[in-house]
Image 1 (cartoon, rainbow, N blue to C red):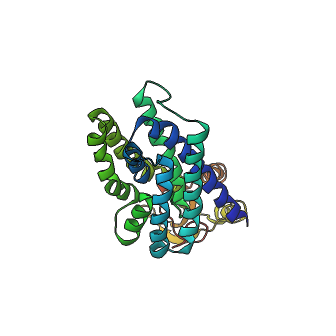
Image 2: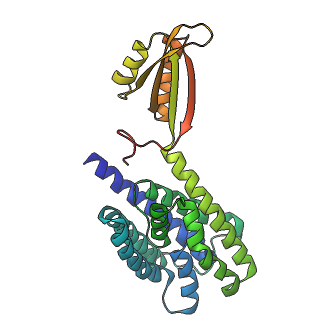
Image 3: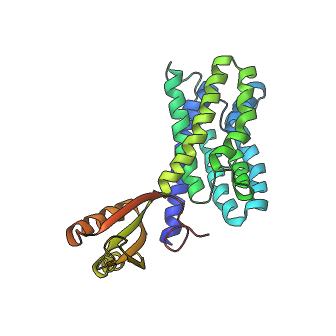
Length: 280
């Protein structure tokens, strides 16, 4: 129940963050990167449909495709996020109608048009959901190919972004292309940051207090490997464990105070699959 509540909160908050970035900074400046919402800018230019209403229709169609290919759990989370995003955009259009950008600094607005949706998308991808649209296409590409999320978004959104050169002007098209490239890179970096853990190699002569601290205080597990020092020939032990960044600080401080002779190798990793981390 706690896990479901956490996922629901993350779905809601990340989707609302995306809605703010898309409506106030992306739609207002006619930036065309970002798949369906980018295409919505183009459609709103030539049809009676508003950008928010078009996003809702297109997202429903892609959601059906996602349900068929990616499964029920993904579809349920994405359906909630898609509907919430579409409703939020439609409400913002009616509550805060905008006839021009918030500022006269397009580069500043581009930064927020990139950062807010990229952060929201990264959180959604990280919990096995998406905001719909071409994010669904990126998830399908990730499932069946070696293409990562960011690159998948770059491929799927390139056409809509390029259209900005012809529909609006070169300046808007260039801003949109820059936004697409930066957003694609940021999403992968955000996802990696959200999943970042610390991988420990601890070489010591007495592993018992360290292992006990890991198990009883940090509530984690570890693997113990027998080893021999190549220079001294002494018997050694290598403790292998993976911890969150905050847990890593605690373990490092414990070893420093209680096993000062231990040798530590600590590295960053974001691909941890197993109990306590991500399932396969």
